Image (cartoon, rainbow, N blue to C red; front, side, top):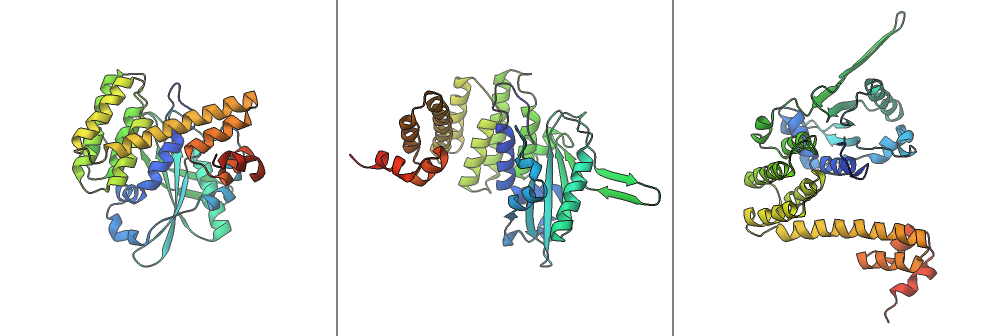
Length: 311
């Protein structure tokens, strides 16, 4: 699931959205299934199965410029049985005529390989007019296949409905709606809406500090606002509405992301200039271990270790 915006790294939104889905998957289930807490035994935890998904869709790992936001998750039901849930996401603005067929292919590949029936969900993040198929059918001479799956489009709920829900995933949906307005409305208006979402989440007062902090980081980075003053005002707003209890964590996390971005840029520059020493020093500053530096730069421990030796 992604949003097509200017001047952003191609896969940034996809990756951010996948991460926020993972962190809030229990609330996603509550959003999609009425009485989810009576259906799913969420106390037993969730198992994310990226390896299994990659095994049945190897092309996802090979395509240049691939956009990956699908999830395969194992959950337990209240009756003690397990259920695999396959979440498909469709890119903003696209009307992929093969989407339903691809969903069906994922389903039967999983069933064929693992013998487990899969609950399939498709979430569409484009404009209202986006195609949103919820079934795949095939008819031969005397053979028929009919496959129906649960689908949701982010404009199935009005923004007032979403803000009225006691569910963090509703705010994610609201946020996806607003992200489609980037470059269409003034950044000041987007900034105000960002603050509205942050305030709504904080006022619920049922989520942990870490989860709120993670969501606010997502909020600031997913809805792309270039104006530094507006971003600074948002930081100050968070400080005020939380009584100063989580602002520093949010800011430090964002700064870390910015440092990582700068370091990656520095690494690319170092590669171009052939300055291995500079690349090692950049990674060292970020806190990477000798082993991690070796992996990232394809170097031996003997080459890297001298840079970690205290003078």
